[in-house]
Length: 200
Length: 200
Image (cartoon, rainbow over all chains, first blue to last red; front, side, top):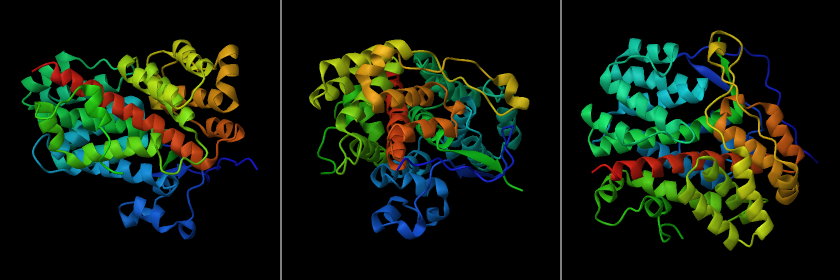
């Protein structure tokens, strides 16, 4: 029997990038909580994610989900030197802005604003897009993220030079590369397996 | 067995033990290990389910080819041939890359203030001869993969229904989406780190 996509309930479609909390509505059936095996549950890594339809959908391939999540956490949360957390989140937000993922951009713009305390600059990135002037260090991080996100990539030695000139060491540059690369992973799942909805 | 196979990102970048990039990757050990674990989960899974190794590596070559990442595409093409793919299938994947290559990201936003950022681009339909060689499962999958690679913000439920109608289950679509999304990460990490290594 051929399966059918889900029809999301009536909702308000967000039409602009925002730092507000959004919902995400799946187009494919997530696993039902009561149908999840211990392996499915373990693949969520964080037990609280059982409430998320996104993670219960991805849990259909538990090995891929668990490895995805552990990759994500080390890229963004590993506190050992490199790029400050705020700027890892900036790279994630810029990548999501360029690919057009309103949901991912909302989450990571919130994080970037929280950790940097630069709410106005983060909002300017959302409003004006990836060419917004955010000061040279942030401009260099956004430009590198965008170049790496283009397909085919336009990331080149000039981006490495600009990041170094802005004060990033090679571990920090590697963090920019990984943060932008990871959001090319995350954006494609979020954009293609469901849609954002405004919360009221 | 976890951790016993050669790290594919290291191999594709050309990272040798004791090099500066080896030291940088060692500072994010979970990301390094789980990027590799994701590769294993998606390309050499313990339980392959309904998606054959040939299908997985055909998608791998196609995604890398669309990124213009020739060395990476060659790696997946080798695995495709090793998995027993016919010469006709290999040629069809090569042909699909040539048919489908373009530049991304493009696509449309929900009608509103972001509409001024809408950017038109091709919707890939596999050419008739290529479609015959790819077969009734891979041809619609390649059309979906092209959207995911180049214009993911155009994703819509109808695209997923087309895959369900072609015999991909909900779980298969999650895995297919993870393959494309993960490769979008892997290719950018390899490209970024290679560029960094070339700028000592």
